[in-house]
Length: 386
Image 1: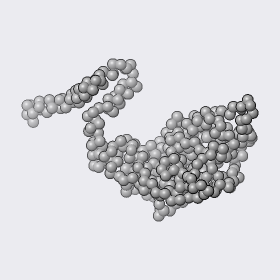
Image 2: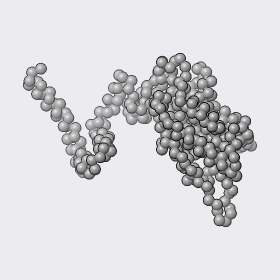
Image 3: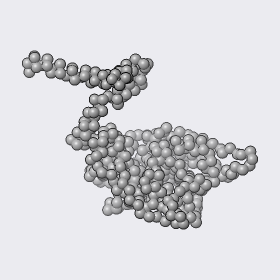
Image 4: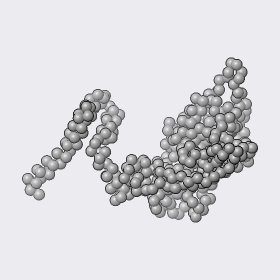
């Protein structure tokens, strides 16, 4: 390459670099806004502020927004790279990276301490606790992620935590054991391109939990008559949404899911919770699936009520089953009024990545009304956990 050609290429490269901020500033000025680069002078130059400024520049860049989708699409098609949150599995399966990271990264024992404390606080109110850690998809279908896991199931660290909790007298329902007994020829227990379980898995887990609660004598079958009807829904992938790349999302159709919607026999209305129920279910988006999402009344909560033949109460927080649901219970002590059992579901990745971690949350006593019309609290007593 001659010196003249080198000069031309260098000039073209510099023009390309400087044209991006110039175009951005021109468009912002035309819209009556001060150029974005001036925002840096309005912030204290700390590391956090500078990183926030850099992120804002990336998100609002006109050129980046125009080019990024095509770059992401090319990386996905040519390299199988779906972004920082998504892993491309085998035969069209998609996985959420934090689910996989949880299996290989160490984590503390904060969850165990928080669960034991919560169990003891409930026991002081005469309420039983059943814990239900939900496996992440790669724990059950690691072979759909990589052929290196074809030899057997993934050894999730959650299994060791279940053993510790049981040794401490906590009643834990082991979904790993339940799901492992499902044959390979059966329909998948998780959606192919979603982080969540299938409708069949939710109803199967609810049936086994109901049977266990009755076997323990913590509750018994009620007299409410429910029946189920088949409903088909189409679910868009939450994992694909995390790519933030519409061109990639368009490559995959929505998944068709057959659900069993629970309805009241007498009225034909879809199942509804009742605040005065003796069983309270708390958890995360796995409880929301098919329950408050379409088709409604077809998720774990409705099927637990169906198998118990009595309505239940519920408190659901997406991603917040580790601490946020307990904080909500502390703010609303009436949620525990008349309760005999709390079933606590949380997806296993939240043992490591749960919002707000695993804080110790003191439950608040429900204030008594001065006119004596407030319902009595559950009678405190020793724990009846086995």
